[in-house]
Image 1 (spheres, rainbow, N blue to C red):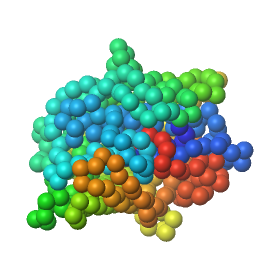
Image 2: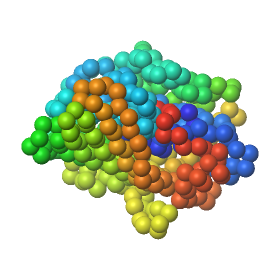
Image 3: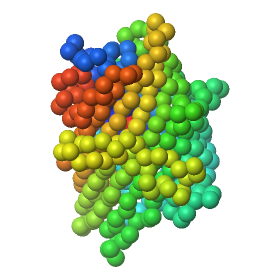
Length: 356
């Protein structure tokens, strides 16, 4: 999995989550100084593994303790990967899904080839001390049964220690009076403290091993409208990915500060995500990569009532990414086209499994 896969959402969320984009890097020879093959592969591979874990945690919240790593089959993968966050709230009947607190072990099974997972993730969801409609999820990893991911490119990522937090706001679905017609807005805030980053060991398919740590924050807002006419269900998700943590003020102590305020390609200022990768290269040198992102898109699904298979389309996709390596100047905002031309990173929302 390559570098932008740590950026395009669950999509956790998808995820949630992921931890939510999908891409394929060709390691273009004209890439700017900010990226090298080993750096890009290691940082994005580690980030994609964290994204899968975040997706699974958010799914577990809605699946009420059922192992959350495998969804029903669909005819077309239409958003950010084979474990997309929006499948958490996919329902085969007319009753909207709802979160449930509890603790369990998430087992990793049955990802679509060529993604393979093994190991476990410790899961705990509670609402202690939180206002109504708020949930806190803690995901942790153990050395006894480490979480291991083999991605599309054949890189093997192992996480055997550490934890991170998800905060989820779901006020509940609002019905229109017609069974199966409802709206809901779900906010998912993923947070890994810089003082306690997730560390992953990445064995690159191209050779060599990298150790990389990941910290930062990312917010995904998903506004869903579901309707049913006869036996045909239509669901529209409007998704925003940013670093706006203002709604967590008073919810989480100490307050988690929003991501940096940056301009998108239209000049509009937004709080962007803030994701920091610290990677030790084979020669022992350590590089820090900062990735800031603001993205919006919509997904519309249609399927027959009770059918686990559906078809979807993506529209209004708008990507803005800033990249900084070490103390070099920040580059951005980059569109998906510029990311492809300058970095050889091709966004493909039908591949990958990363929330971030």
